[in-house]
Length: 197
Image (cartoon, rainbow, N blue to C red; front, side):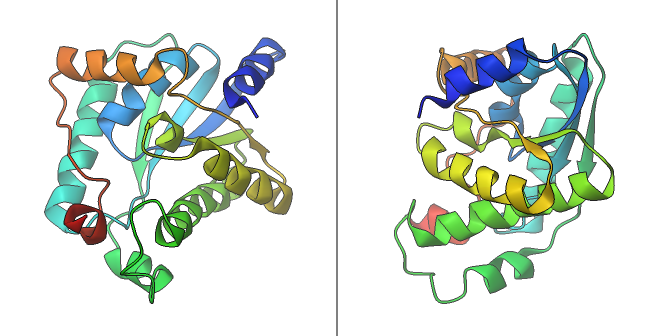
């Protein structure tokens, strides 16, 4: 499935501006996604990443995201919400999968944890759409991430915005924006296992 085409068709058929709850992992991955989607949606970013291996790293990524949103000019306002740091929640979710390779079943549990929390928040506060920045990474499988989104869309009855943000030079654009705004770019996904691998 070409999720970039699915995304383009969804955006083309929007009749009015909708609200979007965007799960974001960090400022670099968010940069292009915000640039792209802020023309179509009122965006609230949910920074929920209990996978990050320590609170200092968590706060650094959150502060960079907040700084970028403040400095980057968009047609529609973008705001950032953090659900706070709770690494134990992540460790409980991946218990028994610590030795899995990066990109395996441990990562799938992590993706689902974060995307499902985004759906829960969106349901509580009546957002029209949910999506995640995770599909911008060339190291993450957009087919798998969109499948999780599809399953949760059916459970929570909120529109999931299908995406493959790395397409159409999206990942390259995020690198350009990261340099332009001097964003902190970490060299691992977030958890102690990705750092190890």
